Length: 123
View 1 (tube, rainbow, N blue to C red):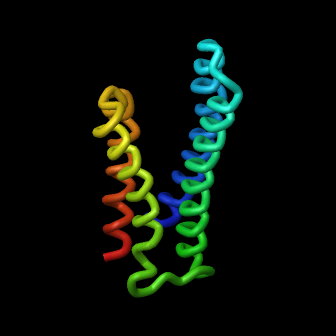
View 2 (spheres, one colour):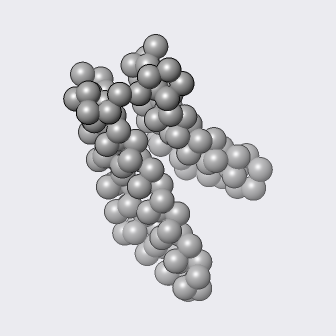
C-alpha cells in the first residue's frame, strides 16, 4: 500500500512542482526583467524536476499493481533517482547558494520522508 501512496504523492508533487515553478518562480524572475534565456532555462529545469517526480511516481504505482517488477539492485532505482535530485540541490546550495537551504527546508523534509519510506518499502 505504501508504494501506491508514494506513487500518487509523487505524481501530485510533480504537478505542483511545475505549476509552482511557472506561476510563482517564473513570475518573480520576469519582474526582475531577466533575459528570455534565463526564464527559459528555469522553465526547463522546473519541467525536468516535475517529469522526474512524475516518472518515479508512475513506476511506484505500476510496481504496486505488479505491472512493473523491480528486483535486486533495480528495486533501488526509484529512490536513487530521488536522491540524485536532492543531492543536486544540496551541492548547488552548499557551494554556490547557501540561502537556498533555508528556503527549501520544507521541501527537503518532505523528500527526506519520502526517501525513508521508499527505502523501507524496498528492504
